[in-house]
Image 1: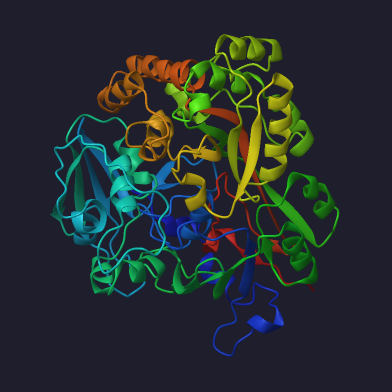
Image 2: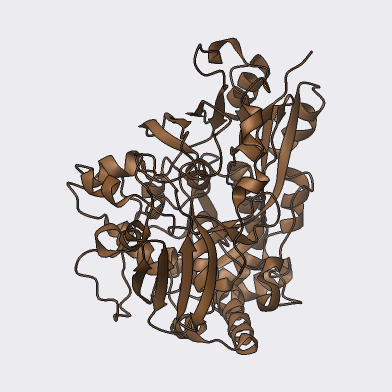
Length: 549
């Protein structure tokens, strides 16, 4: 891997001086960079910004300007790995990856990033808890979606569970010298580079973490290396970021970024049109063409590496028989949902996988076909008598969430399945295990190009669904462990195909609805490119406010 200096790609030095048409409120005597306001549906689901806790679609959007990985994803292309905080890396053996850190990278508190910070980032105080045994294969079940119940410096149970999910067999991180580190896994792992580039592996300041009085204080004002640093965070209201002018990749082009929570789509659109916001996120597909007709605005975005899915709780009495869950998967006309609610702007994918898996992509795989007669035959065989099945739904956390749920309920009714929508206010209520949980909305992302990041990460023994005690399958769990250690790609692909058969057809854990598409509207005089992800990139090579003559 050849070292690459990101500064070669950045035109930041010339952009800040006279390159923007500034709004009046952003003009200052000492700093003429703009302030921008972005209206979002939500900032974080957990009331925190800590990347080992806040693993959500909305969280990725606001975390990207704050945090960085050693190996980065190319947000301007196809998310392929590129040098990030590490300028190069190499494989030592099947269990070890060595990385050379960039020199002179500054944290938001002014400290230089060194190997000591990297080692601490993945250490017990920050991730696994002081009692963690790296040799253990124990599944770490956690409570789900707790927000402010953490006292002092104690790690939330979710942090430990997520860390174990991302790094199930991490043995140690070695500091070879001040600017060189080695990741040593307990078992062979072909996905180490992907894990390093993936979620919950962003690098943080050791001193910043240790000096925080409580974990909640840290989680709401973390110290990292990104181009913007946290000034203030009010959960469910706003997040204000200021430029980190010592950023290694060039001076940030924006003085201040304000993320504002505006749940209503109409309010976000009206705010964009009136000049209250420069960007608005989560634009519904039926509004894309209308906004695009306005010469002052444009809409960017499209498909991302995320699928909308429904998750089953197989312990709910009416869903214990897998044939009822199978019938539900065959009762959904997914193309009708794509055509009616998404104007054809997304697609029905080949199950829980993406083409960027490369050699691990299972060709010819499909979601369960829409077949009412087959669904009805399965229900009859299962002796389903029309028992009500509760369906927990949030109010459009996902684009078109309520409309999609309403259509699905009608489709299930046509097959003879009695599904009843139950609106919930937050994820805590969605996951509440009160004996009445049966079906919920969800999505599943691929953080890197291997099923480990999606299938195993979400539905394996350390995954969210099994942590929530909704579903488990002995063969699936054995395959999950084997897939993590197998290095023969042909064998790994065969294992993944078997996992698809189990989770999507034989003993459904979930069913895929459609690939996620996300759309962002912005002022047309701002030059900015949306990433093929939820992430929003505001570095110097991806933002310019054009001055009009």
